[in-house]
Length: 359
Ligand code: NAD
Ligand code: IPM
Ligand code: MN
Image (cartoon, rainbow, N blue to C red):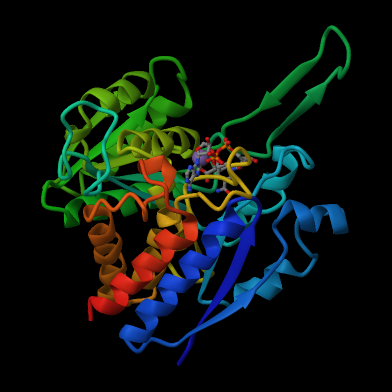
């Protein structure tokens, strides 16, 4: 039976990288006899907001909930719609209402891409950030008082629940257990954020009891960011709260040369709701419209989508294809962020061809 995929390109370079994501998914599906059915939606974009006054139609939940997966580009166009309106009105609703509580973000130095860190080779940087994705610092609890006066107060509470924390920790420990190094690093800040973060540390320690084979360490987020730059080879699985995970999952890929290649899977592990696959990057207004965005973040997210749907071989073929294209170091094919003069489409087509040739 065909897998039904909801495709939401969004804004800016989301609309430019999405065709390459779909192109490569189609190439892999053809090679591995997988039936994919794509349905496109124009909502969850700032253009939709301008036309309708809201980011999503009222029935979005019903519309999307029956899909097997959501393939998302990027959203945000701050020139016309403030970011907190566009993001809270779209992506953050998807994550929360579809209970996509794991945000899995691989970070790997790929062949042919130069790390900005001296002397780092592929193999030296290869870890996952597992980000809590539905609560924590991204909460709607809070408000403003005495607005517009000298006594103005703004409050936004961090909300961590035992259920919400333990389930993402379990996912992270399971992942660490499945990897050869069996190492898990927790991002904390229990020295300064003295209620939620010491409690987070306790939950990590409690979950660790069930995983005697996993080596656990923890760092305060400030020094952890420094270690990402100084010692990226230390890390295997890094588990973090929503905000810390957000920051680490831009910094990690930056250490691998560009955030343009970084993928993410917003996963509802129980499969009650569709999971959502999107690049880590945003709509990049500074380069949008020029056709030069790196499509690999979108393409790799497509590979994660296939893996999630049970098609490991096809997912591997996509990854092998972009690795082969990158390793060939043809500057006429690579996008400018990785030193080339190619375009989004040229690179996307080269990867699609490599998928077909690989079979
Ligand atoms: P951004 O990720 O859009 O861009 C940051 C920098 O990285 C820019 O210089 C951009 O040109 C570059 N970059 C990003 N993706 C690239 C790619 N594929 N190839 C080459 N270069 C790339 O982050 P930002 O500028 O902070 O945000 C822009 C908008 O996107 C905002 O509205 C923001 O809220 C939104 N945003 C959305 C998502 C999402 O949809 N998941 C993620 C992050 C930011
Ligand atoms: C990401 C993005 C989003 C986040 C923004 C756009 C709300 O930065 O997916 O990493 O903070 O989660
Ligand atoms: Mn982010």
